[in-house]
Length: 322
Image (cartoon, rainbow, N blue to C red; front, side, top):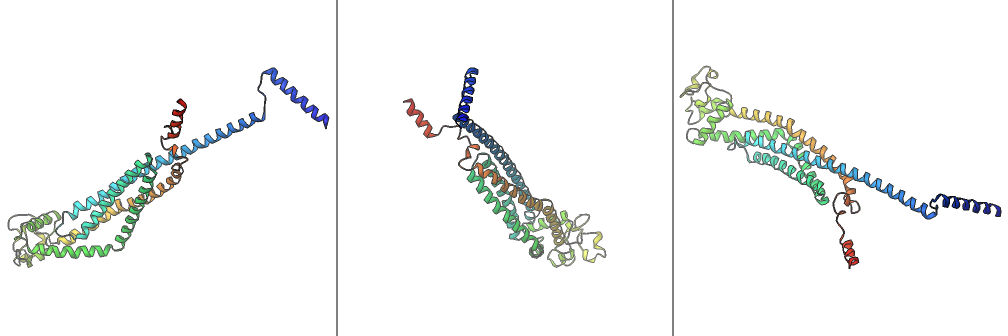
């Protein structure tokens, strides 16, 4: 055993003599430990760079998602504005209050989603973790409200249309009775009958029961070829459809409203609702990655605070300089 120890010492001496001759640094336990620390630091730096890359990708995906969400909010606002200008404002004396509220709510919802998404996009780049989480919460509330309203409207669609039709019929009959005596009612009926190619509330015979109709007449705006007095004595005409529009304005308006509402719902509303759900799921997925970047230990990846000296370091520097 003593011989083995002697041989090992002899070998170590030979290695050290060779290292001294070649001017190489001696290999010690401290050198090996330092090498291990350098490798660990290098691996840690590589992991940190990978985390930065993943978090940066998640950040820009979230930013793009918020921008797309803002665009869908604009689409909702456009839907509400189209309904408002086409029917609600146009037929304002005849439509119920709840229709005003419904269309106004669509516009408000679109504006809210656009505003929240814009703030969320800014909070993602700022970065502002509290703002990001608040925008997610507000978007969730808006989307839940949107989906709940959609389900309710589709389930009660027939009830809403029936209520709208009954209310408009009552208001149109009151306005019809004031034709000729009230300027606004007269102008409104003439304008609608000319543009919608209709006559009367439910049909042209409704005019015979009014003071203006006098049992036989209809307004000249009902005529196919408009001329002064062309609507007089229509009741005695064997084929009135050759001279006037015989279909009522109420069924025409309701049919147009149903058709346009279905077109907007299939072409805008339902696709936007589906996009909102998909985009919100994507935001939740990116928030999982961003959550790591928003912690105290990794927040430097998203901010410029690491560039600025900390107050403690600054004061130590001042003390050392003194």
